[in-house]
Length: 427
Image 1 (cartoon, rainbow, N blue to C red):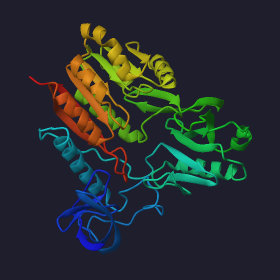
Image 2 (image 1 turned 90 degrees about the horizontal axis):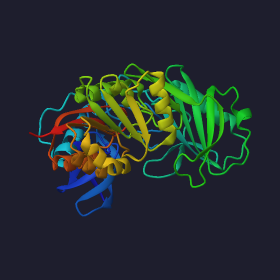
Image 3 (image 1 turned 90 degrees about the vertical axis):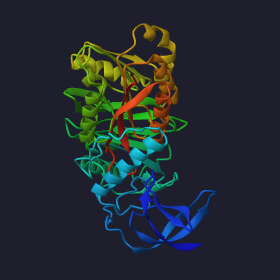
Image 4 (image 1 turned 180 degrees about the vertical axis):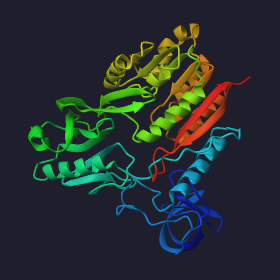
């Protein structure tokens, strides 16, 4: 079935929204204001899904994409829309998600914070390897789209990636399934982590000497899940960057924000919402290598970071020593498990402020535990508005209200939305 459709808005995930005989149809790579001929590919009870067969009248906010892989590679979904309009629509989706799912009723959203860079902003990237194919996954599949370079990446990564592919072109790469490359911001040099399902004795050092890496590691994970076990480490595979006047250093395999300039703006919002005076006890859940913890420590009385990744916690403790953060401590444990185990002890000394930056799926159990702990303020950082809204709804039902909210556009050209919310006890 085909029909002419007027695209009126965007949904989370960046699909255009139109209607056919009153029924909502979702259309990827459509822009609000487009008039398109749509082929319906799927019929659901309450909506349809379709693809653009012909662009009849382009929207005034539409523009040519920068990348030749756009529409095939699953990394970007908004390159066809001018950047200012991307931010505008992300803000609408952010606010609507919080109001509709989270029950947030206030009107005082901060102005969105656009990325200083629309392209070449990513300081790290994971590439998939499938036989001779290197690149990113196709949208909604695990098929690898082979790419030469990506316009979102720091040019140091593009250059090193190209060299590594060339070096490995004649090798049996069946065990190699992923490569992560990151730029150390303070040195402008790259480090890499190679993930293999079995150790076949590739001549790693010989292949990578002179490839532009300051160091690398090889990690073994037979199940192709998680980080696995480090089996080779050569030179310095750590990445370093500045955050709130602190120097953060961690192995390339440890999580860090991909947009360094926006990470600074994110940190500014967290500190602003926390409203620290130098006396508060702060709890930082899912703290990583101390990206938020250590800048918070500069303005708080005491800060405790909780993180499940052993390597991240080791890095965080070293970072605390290097930055003279004597009032910061770290515990290696799952954040929710630690909250449950320590709940009674914490009740005797409730932290004044809790900061959490959980994985994309959110953490509803931690949200419930926090509502029982009842700190004065909770600062919630999330890259997924629907799960953020769900957790906020749980906290709102336990006596908290949102007093500030901001969109930080950490991921231009993609549908991902980074948000920061401040909650406080109502009344």
